[in-house]
Image 1 (cartoon, rainbow, N blue to C red):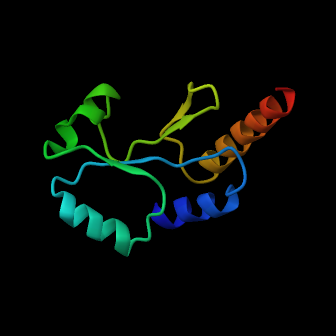
Image 2 (image 1 turned 60 degrees about the vertical axis):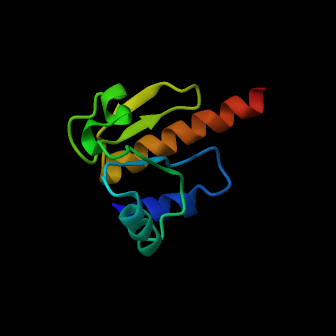
Image 3 (image 1 turned 90 degrees about the horizontal axis):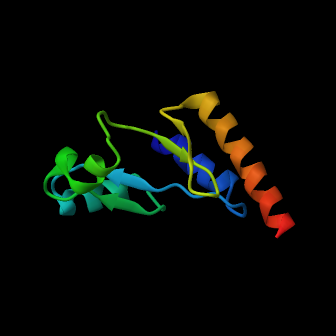
Length: 105
C-alpha cells in the first residue's frame, strides 16, 4: 500500500489531510530501516515489542493487518477497511468537508 499512500500524501499536500501509520514489527531498528527504504515520510507509530498485541492495536480493536481507519476533521471514524477507489472517494469527500468547515470558521 505504500505507493498508494505516497501518492495520497503528494496529492493532498496542501489540504487538511494526514496519513498516520501504526506498525506492529517487533524490532524497532528493523522497522526504522524498512521505513527509510520504503520512503515513509508520514508519522508512523510503533506498537512496541508486543507487536500486534501492543497498546495501540488493543485500544483500537485491530484484528488484522493492515486495518485502515478514515477519520474526519472532527476525529470521527467514518470508514474502516476501505481500499483502492473506495478509499480515494472517502478521502476526497472528507477533505472537501474539512475545507468547507475551515472556510466557515
